[in-house]
Length: 304
Image 1 (cartoon, rainbow, N blue to C red):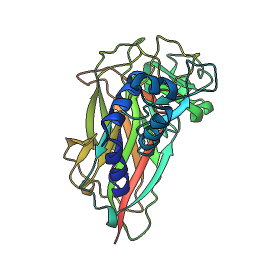
Image 2 (cartoon, one colour):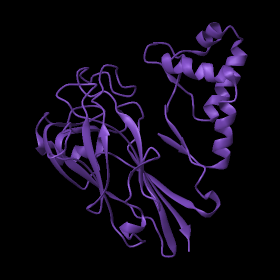
Image 3 (cartoon, rainbow, N blue to C red):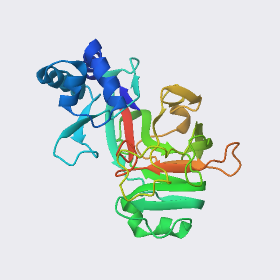
């Protein structure tokens, strides 16, 4: 999920989708990831130059990106859709708000409690053995690109960049996540609980543990019967409440957390044993899944 609120970003996004041709190209690329410019030109019966110009506009809006196709041994660049969901936010007061942003590797958790099935791996190798929680304490975890557990939690200490005189208005966290089934299961609901500084801020039910299609960034050595990719979710806490992908999941708002420039920020993601749907959790970081990112974190503030 990518949020758009900046005026220039919104204008570029609207321009990219203002053409039937570009919308058709976008839909076709989504169905045929890695397709080349020549193949697109042939399919739409237009010139290579016309395709190139439209791809340039779509790329500027972040709707298309060019990369090496896994299905092609040549140096030919293929087209991909990097993001399938967008949230257009027209409410935010852009001129008066500022942002601190960072990305935290998924293995850089400060605390955890893990119950099998579980495992953790870097882009190059499995860390230790599967279903052995002790390996969540292995120093190699800081390079992890995927971790999963059936019951338990991981907690991250988030950097508080606020300075004295800056007022917090919103926190945002973006991460790729799915359930955790023994093997894979497209229909495997799991209730995930989110907390900040030990205060529950909301919950969301992951629909499944996805593995019927290989994750775009998941390495080739990865077992095809293991977790392949998740859903990119945007969790935000503002003055009105807590939202997942723009939909309110809790009335808990930023004011009730009583945060300032001296506050610690501990974010916990849990799959509790007493949930209605005890389907576990998988977190995807760089080198795995479909989005090639860790835990992205934004602090949005105003100057007092």
